[in-house]
Structures are given as C-alpha cells and as structure tokens.
View 1 (cartoon, rainbow, N blue to C red):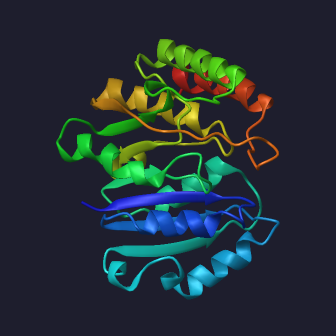
View 2: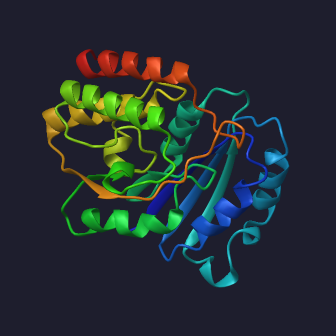
Length: 242
C-alpha cells in the first residue's frame, strides 16, 4: 500500500529540509508532495535543490520506495489551497498531511496507518488529546476542545481533536470531497465533509494518540485567533449546508 504525504510549506527555510529527510526515512512505500505556498524567505531555494536532486533528502537505498514532487503556488493562497493542489496530484492509496515543522513527529505516521491496513478504518485522526501534553497552552487547548465539540454536534462524529494536522484518508475518499477553504478553515471543512460523506456512503473513522510539540508565534506558528472564528463559520457552513 502506497502513502501520499502532502506537505504544505510557507516560510520554513530553517526546518523544511530536516522535515523532508525525516519523512523520507519512513520505512514505507511513499510519495512526498511538497507544495510551496509562494514563500518569501529562502524556502524556495531549498526546495529547488530538492527538486533538482531528490537524493538531498532520500538515501540511495530508499529511492525505490520514495518519490519527491515539488510544486510551487504562483501566489500565496493559504494552507488549504496548497493541500487542494497536493491532493489532486496524489496517487497513493492513503493521503496524509504533514506540516513543514516538528510540531508533529513523522515517525508516528506508521502507527496511524495500521487501522486502515487492518481494515478497521477508512480515515484515521491522530489526536493530541489522547496523550497528555505538558506545555500545551491553556487557551489553545480550550479553543480546540470547544471547536471539536461544536464540530461533533454538527457532523455526528465523535472525535476528540478535530483540528489535528494528522488526518489519514483513503485517497478515493479525499479526492471525492469538494473542498473550498483555502486557509486554516481546511480542518473543520474536511471534517464536516467527511461527516457528510459518512452519512451518504458510510465510512469508518477512528482516532489514535499522537505527540505534539507546539511552537509559539515567535518560533513561526502561523495560526491566529481570527482563524478560530473562521473555524466556527466553517463548522456551521459546511456541516449544515452543501
């Protein structure tokens, strides 16, 4: 079974190469699809080197299992738009999003695939709240829990972490969704769309615990308070209306 790992990138020149190397080291048959959202720093130059020579991130003995595709958005449109493009390019059996930093550990991806490989799930969410996280900001935790509860009420799902980055979805399912949100509204929208898909076609969604190492705004975190208000809109908009 082949995995498509979609990595949206914006202004991550210091971390993106290390993230790609760690993802490439996963002992899986995989394609890595990097979408640069028109970065303004040196990210583009780093990715140009990767595009010209994928062995910058893949070892010689892993080349047979790993392909690397680098795409660049002509203008900055947001994380959601970058993911839409990456999903359209995906050819693997399962699609997963990996952020271009180390808030989430790529080494946990293999354990998240297991429920799908065993036929127990079509979708797997990696929940940060099934593990205790020291240093998880209180207001961040509160906002995430409130948004997750609201999402569950609308979608009929029972997840504990709607906003998680780690959502593993079978490719035919994710490519059948009509996704519109171009920025951080992607998370509540895709969850609402999956809830709608489940009601119409049926699917099995399970959660597995994942680690989380939050960054501060000073360290490069990009999501802001306004994105929480957008999330509320998306929960209502895509959960209750087509």
